[in-house]
Length: 146
Length: 355
Image (tube, rainbow over all chains, first blue to last red; front, top):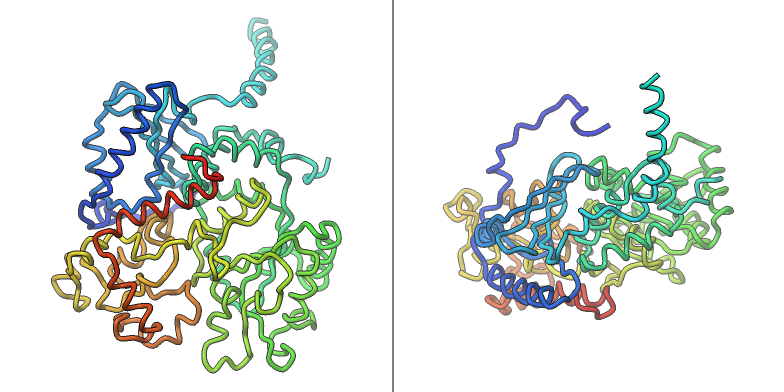
């Protein structure tokens, strides 16, 4: 059962859910932090993640950041406990990751700096599970051929 | 195998929930708690090794808004994952059992998990006249909390009533209502105030208890620093207007329509510690200030006995010196300061490891 199963629709103008804040100095501070992270990852350092949800950013700040970082070659959608959206920015290795819940409202968004965002990788436990389930395909193939 | 014998990881696997979903849940929790995102994979691994936590929920002098709020954390999918992590063994409003059967369930859960169960309390506890003003099954709340607390690993006081006495303790406090920590003094106690409290705090506290094996770090009022470490004012998107001296003077003037600072209309943001400004309410839809109303300070003790919600802090009701001093301090440095405090919390949780 999800919110979509409830036959009540909220007709909400997306413009109303935006705050009416102005740009703050946070964006400049963030750009500096990202720059440091990109340099360290470029030199072989471990993955870095900058959480955007906890910073006092106005919606205007987020838009400014988005326009400065731009879009790169990759975008991906994950369906696991609601959607997640990922896109590479115009700077390879700098990813914008958005986690949505079932109702498609944003739960958390992060900038991730590294070769691949962690949520894209399959977990060893899940791979082990598929290795166990996969041979079931053999049986199903024989049935259809008969 | 009993449910409790499975690790949470095995339990999720049995239900066909992928580790990717699990990782996403941990990412959402870590995000709300200012836990460095780089710690999320380790947190997920540790949580996967944990077992279901027995939780006993005691409701005393309360209005049920706390549980109304908390059952709405993150909406269905992510929330239902939390309910895989805990075994809610006793809760008046949600359990099927009633009367004697319910009380038997409570005592069975206490016996089975003695020393390990978590107690969640909502509502204040009356202590005047030996606590006769609120009873369940012939026992006063006062007797009940002492009995249940004895075998608890820790206690989480949910809402302003269980934390500080709340509305029940409003002047003249006819029942002698107090918060849990005025009665129980020998157990770890965490306060999650708010009227109602934010659902994400509950999810965060339970998840971090299961992952790290302890309650999170707290402030002087026993509130988790990750959520209550900063004021509404420090995290408010209208803060730049405060710094520029742009104030709404009435609820219908030009300033109000332009979304300027609500300080002069009585906003208690500068002295209220809570996470509304970044987490927002109703799945991130909005929060009081964004809707055009000042913060009423509901997560602070005695907030309703401090005169009008609409008098500015500088008028003096809220411990005048504190309110004015804080409001006057360090305007332009605020945005940077908020980021520094946030990083400090992260460093603390990661044991000083840089995120």
